[in-house]
Image (cartoon, rainbow over all chains, first blue to last red; front, side):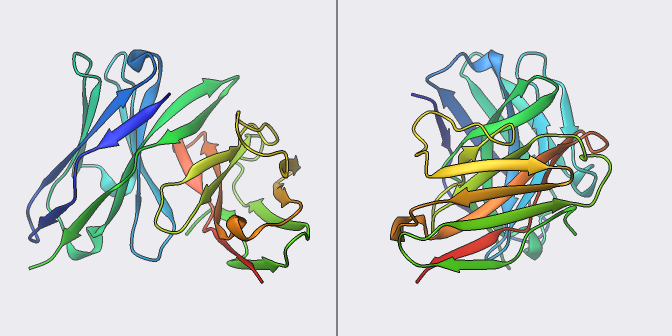
Length: 121
Length: 110
């Protein structure tokens, strides 16, 4: 079955960086893309960006451009998301999720379990 | 500020049918399909409906989706206590080249 396994929770100080991993299994890794979505405490879902696993192309939400980098290692079926210059309002659960193309539109189906990143001095 | 608008809360009693709505305010997603996700407390979102009205394997047929014009709806029939969760609509935004999410609707089963 499809599974996305994320790395464990992190506690970071303001100004630091965090790098979260997301390992896919149960499907052909390069056939699907991976997107990242975050959820601040008690808040809704916020799209951050995506990476096309088969060619490494990326697209980041404007809010995160310059602070986020998504990469992939197809030899280990793993995608990484690095967020730099952390601020307290970056405290959130970060999810990776698989996406696929159906017709003309992209759809997110399976999600990782989430990684809590806490930014605190 | 989301371009997909959902009511923040909804409620129903066991066995009842409830509907959660999602309205689009951007031409960038006007013709695009809508997906629905269920997020149980403390869990990751789970895909309930894709392509406006398609159910992934394993999702009970109590859940159904529809879309008309710039509004989409998720209907849950035969409401059960385990349906108490947050529900999010989402759509691909052609301008962003990414996804937009509704603000979420918290469903309470009374």
